[in-house]
Length: 240
Image 1 (tube, one colour):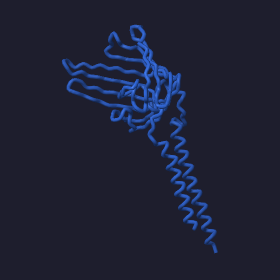
Image 2 (image 1 turned 180 degrees about the vertical axis):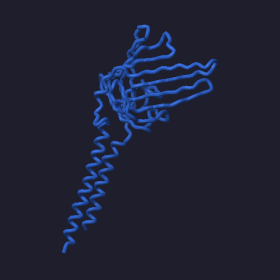
Image 3 (image 1 turned 90 degrees about the horizontal axis):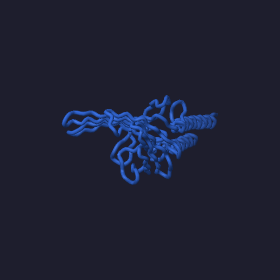
Image 4 (image 1 turned 90 degrees about the vertical axis):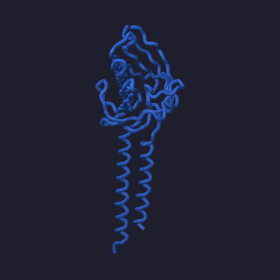
């Protein structure tokens, strides 16, 4: 009888473990930003042209469902203002103002290595790791890819903040093969932002990892305790 109760207890706790763990692992495309958050980027271009940008800034002006409205401002290196531009980005569909784009300046929050980037069948996250930006360690998602044709070779690196989904860094290097091999390189990197205070971290890890681990530990302790109680009851029953 006690063995039966022990098996039932372990089964129920195991089901609970799966129920708690599954939401943490489920792939969902949800915004991780709020109105007023922004990222300002410093731009480096080699070689420079008359249209080289000095810096630009994306700021969140609205969030509704999976849609994030961003406003872009900036300045060219000749001190003229960068044209202002607004875009409604659907992070679940991978669109800006209704048009699909392979890479957007903001993605869903809390994605992980191997997760796909909308729209479908384009990019996926190659790696999730910790990098330092503005002297702060952040959990980031990295897309690193190359492509080539008979005319050019291109390498692309994009780094997204995992907690907010905001792009922190992008680097594109292109080599044109004809008529003379020519290489150009453009990089954008975060120079100023207010998103870093939004990440809830514990001992350097995102808090959702900590809470998931804590829940698993608690459940394991519950299983051990339940087994111990059932064993004691069984001993009492069989004791002469």
